[in-house]
Length: 309
Image (cartoon, rainbow, N blue to C red; front, side, top):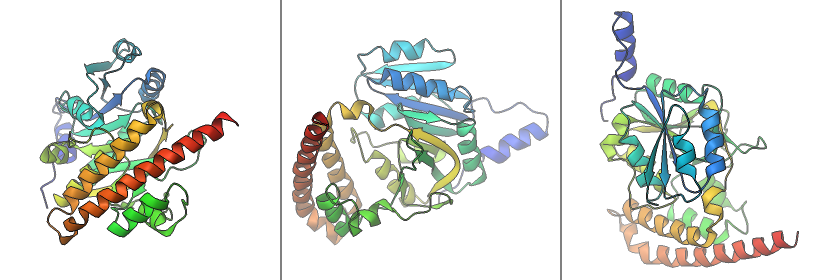
């Protein structure tokens, strides 16, 4: 087990002795954005009373004025990059802050009052936890299934082939943990990267997100490597975040389907690199091709349905 940082106790001791607080901010929120200006501004509005010590926006190649709008907000730092994908953009944001707690979020999230502070306090009080995810809700109040299991080969194949057409199939239910009680705290395999709080010591130990993931699965990979390094990953409904799924992804659906498959291929390659299961990678790739075709057909059919609604 890797040693945990001294953040919480050290800060408390400094205050007790009348010393100065830590030089850097305790909690930083890094928001990654790509061409979702309205979502981004709504996210920044919600962060005004979320308890963050620092707010950074990493704009990944937007052409809709997002970067300029974010830079004009008081108390917000904006970093403008080319379109490098979520993981690499988040890494760039983290590199610009010295905060001990890093909250990494999509631009289509909305934070509740004191949400950032609550996540920071959770990590401070759980020194063996490397990352924690809050309860996530849709804008209409429904709970999002933001807790997942690392899928077995059987679950991966079943979910890929049947998940779109038969969401209640047993393999998808096992992977998505549909029966998980989202009112209780607990250790989990991984949590959604739409909003995840990560301990800096753990994040730096891993070298951050794997930049080879352009979109999707980088959160699964990060949590998997945290577990490998001896850190725990937790779900804790100590606060809530609203996630309005869509944003930049919805405008490039077919490309995103391909990117998702490519990322899954990389993750399975890493997970089974030292196992006999690596021999099944050609079969996994064949299954991913089938999933891409099925997902494209499903997306096309859904689009036609909505067009005639």
